Image 1 (cartoon, rainbow, N blue to C red):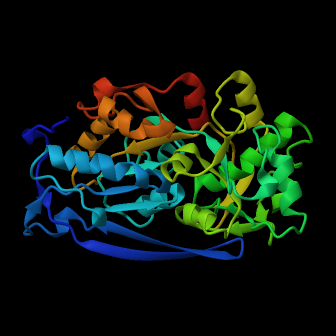
Image 2: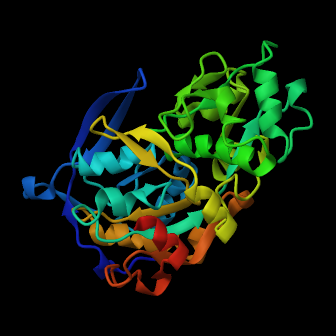
Image 3: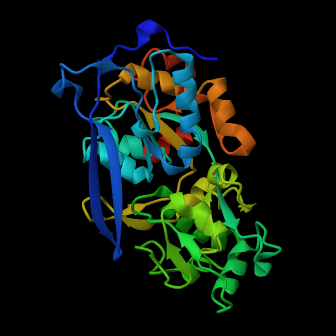
Length: 372
């Protein structure tokens, strides 16, 4: 049980829900994202005070953060963590909501540890806490006979053969790489599979995406289906898609069959060989301003911060303290979903609030190299 000292959280004004809808064209496909966030406390000085925790986080954390938020609330009378104050989106959408839409939340969490330093610091955040890793895996419909025998080595050639054969097997699910790191990680996993197991970086990728590897990747129609990650589990179970690449945490949380990938292919490894392989690859995504920007592979590391203008900054720090505690680690690691980092890492040990100082150490040099 973890309790928040009564003196730690100063009450803040009640918040007003604001919904903003954003539409952007990405490779000819539109996406819409709704955000719920707090209005500025300074704009409502006379309203009734409360201590409501608000979260804006990567989609796969929807299976873990509500539990932790509920634990924090149940252990500390007066704190609430309603579902209405929690939103789970693609990580690039999370960063954009704060930097472009001025979302006011107590905690922001993303699936790519590079996003907070590159998109939010120093204006919107002062530090990040890197709290867990989880590799990419291949999720598939185990009832499809053609997939029997899928393994770490052969999944790339098997999927390419089955899905291009005209056998009627449902398409492969892909994510919008311009809004969700899972989208570009899926691209990199395909490239790396070809590099590690022979054939080159286009040997698997080229069956699912058009465009030269390194440029903007367009999903191939009929072979792929562009869908939001949040719907992946239901789409797979309903037979609308046959397979996809996603985080192990998502597969385990949703009870999906999966094949583990080679540690390099699954963006889990940080050896010198893995880092050298990652440095060889790139793809392009659309920025929030509509420009094509390059992205390189990196190990999958989840990170969080308390934004500078968080309505309940101390409460946000308390949530992060719980997140990186043994209790938080137990929630994250259930079933092998995440591997918690103990202690957690930060890009700026001097900037974290005192309650987090004992929980974190500086990023290792190989990881900080990705932030240069």
